[in-house]
Amino acid sequence: MLIGCPKEIKPQEFRVGLTPAAAHEAIGAGHDVIVETGAGQGSGYSDEDYRAMGAGIVDTAEEVFARAEMVVKVKEPQAIERKRLREDQILFTYLHLAPDPEQTRDLLDSGVTAIAYETVTDRAGGLPLLAPMSEVAGKLAPQVGAWTLQKANGGRGVLLGGVPGVRPARGVVIGGGVVGTHAARVAAGMGAEVTVLDRSLPRMRYLDDAFGGVFGTAYSSAAVTAELVAEADMVIGAVLIPGAAAPKLVSRAQLSTMKPGAVLVDVAIDQGGCFETSKPTTHADPIYEVDGIMHYCVANMPGAVARSSTQALGNATLPFMMALANKGWRLAAAEDEHLLAGLNTHKGKLTYAAVGAALGLPVMDPREALRV
Image (cartoon, rainbow, N blue to C red; front, side, top):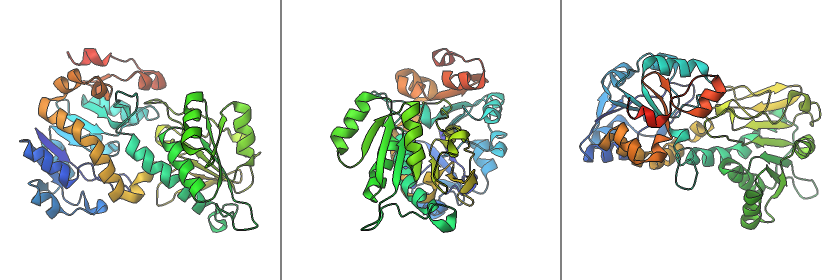
């Protein structure tokens, strides 16, 4: 198979979909790899690093899309990229279609077979291709929240860890999954008083057993959430419903109950955000204020630490990419139900139920798509 990797063009996206090591694996298995010139630069990989592994370097993204049988990326294809996709092509990348009807329509119009990292599953019910970026985003969230809390950035002027004689900041993490666990660990490690909200009693028991005393937990009822959000200096939204739009857990009306200059960090912004007042921002202009509350809603947080993120993502995606290349998408997905769960579009049909529910579109059973 000819595998192509274009340079990411989303603003301030410095990751790359294919590392030189992954290119070496694919070439060693008999495949061909082409990479757009400069694609790895933001992650610290030069064109020569790819050439040394046997990959070809091409001058333009147009050539990558025109030649590649499988396009491997990081972020969802932008409008100009979507025009280059075709029906006999595999797209393997993050998509986050539920809050993005325009992208969904373009992918359906192209006929491309689109497999989304964020909906591939594993035997434990996890999301193995989302997990590494969730870990990165979770660890980044308290850092960017602490920065936003600084007075010069519009925040309350509160030091996350306090100092002797001065109370630390109060942090609330909504969601006790991968993002929430890493966010709580880092925030608590920085000295904040942290409470993790979740609706799963088994998950809260696990967090208490594993991290007892490091941070607290509470059941995420509407009343408890409202109470803790009102007391918080920093709230991190870390709720995920796989493939679906994120639920809105803090309303605009609740902002008036919060401390002026408090911070909301919405890690779920890729899926539409879990605060009513969230809107996507970029690393170039990451924060904004609504009703006296500061919002940090960068849609590609892991892109800020591109080298670490690229390596972590590449480690997770490589086995699936190799299965797709070695077997073709139909056989690979037929043999692996977890990879089949990643199928979102095929030949103009939507194949992921949660996206269909979010956008009001008909959905084909992905097992049926294997026969089309």
